[in-house]
Image (cartoon, rainbow over all chains, first blue to last red; front, side):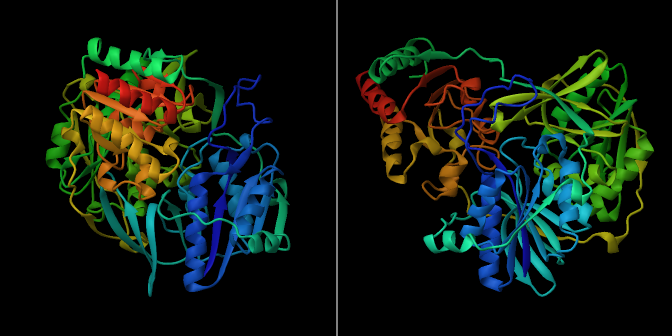
Length: 256
Length: 323
């Protein structure tokens, strides 16, 4: 089974975010970056499918040069090779324009299965998977917990709301966006890290793939949320803060 | 320009978020001086369409077809493309349900558009519609605008608009039968099912102490359990804790777990991703203990301690026992 996993590099989850001077994005230069966590689960699902059915896992990443580090980490975990669509200003591409470049990069690949994470931790559109499916002409399903190979294609377990689930069958090739947290993520082994150095990373520019910045929707400005609710904060050492909190819960909120 | 709200129902039962999306539609129509209609997809929709027609909308479209009995992204996208063209709407709103997340990007892409997903608010600026979304899991907000001619698409986050503000009225029902081809539907949905019945009913708990990622190791959960016991509270958790198997799924609060509204909800080491907030923001009093002062949980908290939970929680246990 040939599996493509789309991954994105985003600021680390515990980053302290500041708004950039432009007011259009956050200040990213002094942040550390890592794989978008939902994509790490898509990669894990891809690696597990490969272990079961043999084949190949190809990592696809649209991002700036620094995303090369995240790609290496994916290769160290067991992906076989990678396609890095380099673009220093991916923010100029809306989700559709970004997916068009990714679809163009996959033209010569014809994978059996394309996997994505559910959404990105930064922009959080949660749309790349189904957009890519439509552009590639593939059937798709989202919020997937399990993937099982069957004679007619695949059978997946979809999560619905309120604790409901549903199995869905579809032919291959197909695209799935994988639910986060469905399995334990593996670490790269020392051997894996060593091997990753000699694995192929095909680097292409977005422009070479016919990509161009486009925005059917434009991001006007970003800002820190204004508090709609006034939170009473207790400061000082833990003991004092805890005592003050219990006092308030007892006599002001009257919930204790 | 006019607005169309796409409602979600299954076997005659509404997804309640649909009414919030309809309120968003009514408010946008008022702000933009235009009209709003609503559409519902399925089969045998007489009762649903009649109910919809009792709201302040121009038209209630019942989009019916045998192939709309069970949800598939292929049928939904094809049916909606036709229904939207028929309605002439230039802005189409959806509730941000799991189902909408599944088909809306496909629908928008097939028309060369990008949907603005998970909208929390709107404004009109210089006659232009501005939609507000959360980025970085709620830590940053952003204003978006449509840059191309309609139809444009947006989905509305759960709880962003109040369903109780829905205006009643009287609209006409119009049946619309899309042209759908069975052979073009590629996915085959099976029966829906629920896993093991829930043994813990968090929705009945008066006091809840919930633990999140900040707890770091499974063995540290005992500390939060001790706080819950001291308070006489039920222990709950955010999704990552249950995914990791540190606590059973039945203790999960949030969009994929239980929705709770206790007297007191104490969130320990929970940053407050929107999927968690929708499950607990109805609590009467919310307390947040988190090391990150910018964590979104403080957006909904009445009281908060910014600090290391491994120091705060033991101090809190002691203070609770002394009360």
